[in-house]
Length: 407
Length: 64
Image (cartoon, rainbow over all chains, first blue to last red; front, side):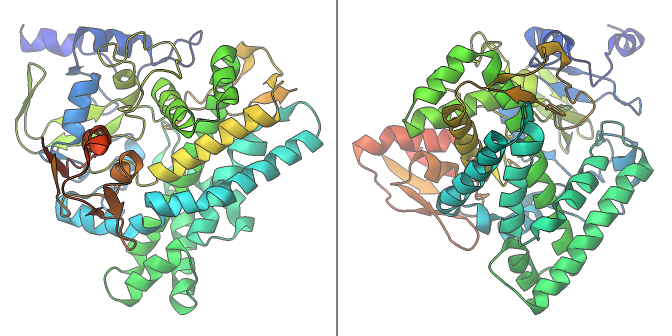
């Protein structure tokens, strides 16, 4: 095929979902995935990176050290104009560093998220969840699951872990969301990020003087020890805060909706007392919904032969979680939510060195919230027609803006 | 079965402890993997295989 023809055939990315199937990845992405595990797409700046849609190829590339997250490298497929225009203003972080530098950042963040530390948090997560459900049951109907449960549970949990006062949570929600809009202008995103970074810098400085048992104090201790500077500490803290509240909140909101739309599956989860079944149910919900849309961005630093194609050094790579999680080669009948299937290798948290730092916390929160909600309000149902539920088509993290329920 | 782990590769995901808590642990300070037993008993073998497959950093090696 000639170069000109190839150029004309390349589809624009990201693509739109089918409004009638709001849980499904965009149909065009699914079609591409059925044809090939990787193909070229055209993004907002006219460049044509590789889009990875196959489960196996995605796993391999996530784990390949020839694939970089360094967004200052030529060819990196930026999300939007804002991310490109601020690339030299943002200090290096766990999200944009490779190899040893990444390991150094990552290990500074890992202490509160070990499997055992998170297991120890379960009673506290249960208590926060029960408080929220008490308030729902005591309040008027319909109630909005997003405002009353999905946002407050992870916000309270991550804020306490980090040592951020709860009374600041509205400030955080607002500033965290501004910059994540799908086509955020450079100005919108910068304002939100600057406010958060400013707040976190003050908090790190406070904790350097008056440490307590929390993650920001851990970071402040590293600043005192000369391992990182205040700005780096604030950047790491901001990342945890945003990643820790918005993603889990979206997963709770849209996860509850998926369970309400699949009542026989919800019943299986409600009736189970088996921690392994409950754990796998959350993996399957993560597989089915893959809320991080528009792809994980990378750039090749060497030529890579994979899936019958050659990704050249300097070419952009977009690993799209949703089609990879709906790859029929990995999960037969991928469009069915089936809590009994083994969803252990789902890619909702990504894979490779940059896999979600907070995944064990997210798992514990999701396991507790879904199970407790179904148990405590077994007659829960949607209070509006399904097609009136507002979906977050325009956000990097997919979900629902509100979810009115009754019981 | 003989198990080895690479602490330099480890990214502290906790996937090993989630899948095979009898065989793996994490350091308190930074979550890096600690191997509790080099030769796990046969009834742990399947869990160890799952842990190795789930490890995002490919830091677990198994010799069957």
